[in-house]
Structures are given as C-alpha cells and as structure tokens.
Amino acid sequence: EESKALRKKQHETPTFGPRQAAALSHHPPMRAATNLLRRHVSLHSSLAARSIGVSLFVDPTMKFSASVSLLAFVVPASAWAPAALARPAFSTLTSALFSVSTEVVGEEKTESFRLKFKGDDGVLSPWHDIPLKGSGDSYNMVVEIPKMTKAKMEVATKEEGNPIAQDIKKGKLRDYHGPIFWNYGCLPQTWEDPNVEHPELKCFGDDDPIDVVEIGSASLAMGSVKEVKPLGVLAMIDDGELDWKVLAIATDDPLAAEYNDIGDVPDAVTAGIREWFRWYKTPDDKPINSFGFDEKFLDVATAKEVIEETHEAWKKLRSGETDAGKLWTGK
Image 1 (cartoon, rainbow, N blue to C red):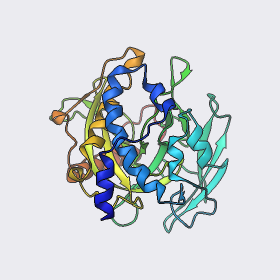
Image 2 (image 1 turned 30 degrees about the horizontal axis):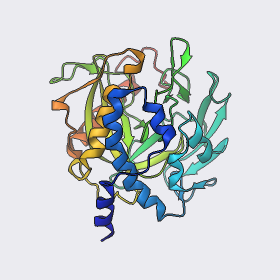
Image 3 (image 1 turned 120 degrees about the horizontal axis):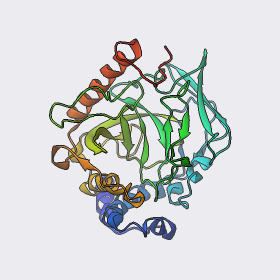
C-alpha cells in the first residue's frame, strides 16, 4: 500500500521552491526537464516527510556523522549550501575493508579549495585507492556534487592525490547555471580511455572516471563514499567525446528495494536526467549534447558491462600499460 501511495504521489505536482525555479528561469530549453523533475522531487518529499533524519555519510560505523532532514534538498540552491549543512571541516568514515578521512584545505568558493583524502598510511586517492566494489553487488560512489548545488566540483585527475576541487574554465570557477537535481560523482578505479574508439558510437572516452547520477532521496555530502546499485547507463556525447552516465541509487535508499533495472525507474526521472544533461551548457553559448543508442538509457546488465570495461581501462592506466600523459596515477 505504501508503494502504491508513493507512485501515486509521484504524478502529483509538488511545491517547487521559487529560488530553484528562478535559477532556471533564464534557461527556457530546460523548463520541460524541470517539470519532469518535479515529479521525482515530489516522490522523495513524501518519503522525507515520514523520516526524522538520515545520516549523510557512508555507514553507521563512521566516527563523525551529521543528520539532517531529507527536506534539506529544498534549501536555496547556492553553490555550497547542502554541503555546508552536511559536512564538518574534517570527518572520517570506516568500513570493513578500508578507512578514509577527508580534510578541507584552502577556502570554499576559491581556487585554493581542496578536499583531500587520507587513509591509515597517509595520502589516499579517491580515484585510485578506494575500491570499485562495495559489499555484495554494490559499487562505491565518490560524491563530488551534492544534489541541489551548483558548484562544479570534481576529482582532480591531474593533481597529486586527486583531491576534489572546483573546475575552472577560462580562469573562472565553474558553476552550473541552475542546481543539479541529483547527487553526482564518479566510480573509483574506472577510466574512460581517450585512446579507444567505441566500435558503434565512433567516439573516444573523455579521459575521466565514469560518472554516476544517484537518484536517491538524501543529499549526500561532497567527499562521502556511498554504496550504490546501478540501474542503467546513458551514452552522452559531449563535444565529440563519449561520457557515460551511470544511473544508480544508494543501497540504503527507501526505493532501492523497488528499483532494480532501468525499467523500474519512472520515465519522468530518466527523461529529466537526459534533458538536463542535453541543455545544461547552452547558457554558455555551447551546443547541446547528444546521446547514443537512440537516446535511451541502457539496462543494468549493459551498465555493469560498461563499468567493467572502464575498470579494465583503469587497470591498464594504473599499471603503465597505457600512457597516463598528465594524469596523476600515484606511480
């Protein structure tokens, strides 16, 4: 009965904050995508209303944690707001396999900001040292951008230790023109090889770890490591480069038990994600992005195949079999 109520709620029109709407008001091509996304926000808002709070970190054994209402994702969409709510300056996570601490260096909203990762033996790379696989059939996601924020944060693949930093374009810190509606990050120990041409799409990898769009209800803190289950994958083509987007959900999300493959995810969610990524660069006078495979999300089996391919590419990069160029691999 609860499941039916949630699905019914999904098709109702929720309250959408005026500041969020204003952030996209100058971006007409994204309005249709925004309307689709409202349904997904409504669905998870109904879940949030029944929750007192949720840990924003990877597991309950963490030494430092913070709890915040799931409704936190409707705060004003400033570049850093949800991350500031979720994360102290220094925090630690542990699991049965590894322990990680993160430390802020520099000032937020400046070029000096870095979120560095450390393990028991010193500097730890979130790209190379955190394992790809989580418990069971899950994968570890490194969260770079919390939902409802605008700062374009990313694992710095060319810097020593691969800290998280804000992307810079033409000498300026990069922000999205409106908030991203999901948690965004990457899978460690993966790499989209720019030297390998996809046999069907005829384009090369984008030289980064594979991206993850996590559609759960909680706003996940930047730098947190979250176990997720993949549901599908979208082949985005950005400036001629293949940029896979794995759609996933946190394993502890209330809807994780219902979502097992791409067909389980509401069309409003998948269409909203695709359209957001199609149009998000156009305010900078850049062309829209395109998508392979008839613009469809491919199923979970294909997603796992793509993840494994990028993992094998990373192994070759890490071993030195593939030239790293300017990438920092710790070797």
